Amino acid sequence: MIIIADSGSTKTNWLVLSKAGEELYSLRTEGLNPAVFPKELLEERIFSNKELVAIKGKIEKVNFFGAGCGTEAPTSILLSVLESIFTNAKITIKEDTAVAVYATADKKPAIVCILGTGSNCSYFDGETIHQKIVSLGYIIMDDASGNYYGKQLLRDYYFGKMPKDLADKFEERFNLDADFIKENLYRKSNPNTYLACFGHFMVDYKAHTYHQELIKKGLRLFVENQVFQYEKASELPIHFVGSIAYFLRNEIAEVLKEYNLTLGVIERHPIRGLVKKHFKVT
Image (tube, helix red, strand yellow):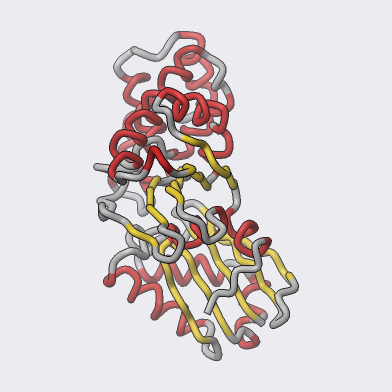
């Protein structure tokens, strides 16, 4: 059996396929970002799925695409975890940008963007994936991501800039005690995922004028900082993957139009697009 896994900081989708490419299982664990989570937590999250653990000895190949796998040190940590669990498998790890490209670009040149818990952007020339900027993570980068929007919502709430009708709903949904927030941001292991949970609130009430302005501000930052780093951006389709991209697809279309950019494919779950296009992962 073969596993294809697509992982962010929030969740990991696992597809278990037969050698012929037939889907046998669709499983999920929490996110496995090795740049954010320690080795022990990565192991714990995999072992939390009993179905996955039950078949681990039958897996011959693992193709893992993940956030945080763009540099050597965290990738090595994740590789050691996967090798210790899938002991009979050949394991390949690539950054999540690769599955985004394979799921959307169909081997044609494009700009491919990720908008989920975090954000990223790559240029695909039809054969090779290019990235000019190494992501420095959620504190400094990740424009227009779930954690970016969560951070803005918390700031505006505490600075009294969130409209009262939304602030009342915000208070009903979340524990906004300052000590509770700081505990999650500075002492717990996944602050980026914690921030991203506030982004769901924005999506639920995205028709509100305040949210529309917030959404488009983030998307414009993403276009200017990420998309326009590539000289051919105005000549190529701009593809997107991830939950934030999917739920903000109308706003993305509007913002790209402002910049005279061409919207391509928006794929919520790139792992599905990968399998659908019958990409052979070696």
